[in-house]
Image (cartoon, rainbow, N blue to C red; front, top):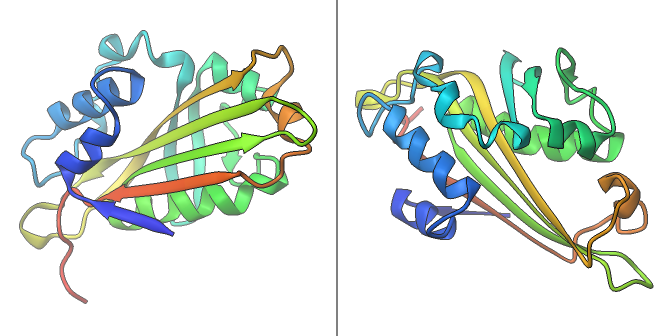
Length: 195
């Protein structure tokens, strides 16, 4: 279940500092006006340089398909391979395909900003994985009730394992199939026309 919040509520959930907060602030600054999506050309790679290892840029191929334009090195570590040039959800591990489609699909169709937070606990272990993913739409439209056209998704991923571990992330999750806690929060940058 997703919780819907306004822009300030979404921003407050991101905290004062950190990658998600910084990226969302950049995304807001790239919008020509508060009611319009930032176009892909507004993205400033120099402003993203410190975040690039944890970012993935997806081109929208179809409402339920995305091509990975680029994936940072932390994402290569997370999936134990480079996803650049691959199509999602097929390129993801099978257990993540439905979840990706449930997140990226509405972000593509409605221009939603999406924050997914989860806590995974490995059975018979003290290991915990804190995982967060933020999806920000890029495209055109959205002003004055015009349906937005999302052409790309900017995805940021952050995780922390406690106590630290030097395994690929998915090996840690092998036995922790379901998160102990999960929260999905969405923000609609603008209202879409009633259909």
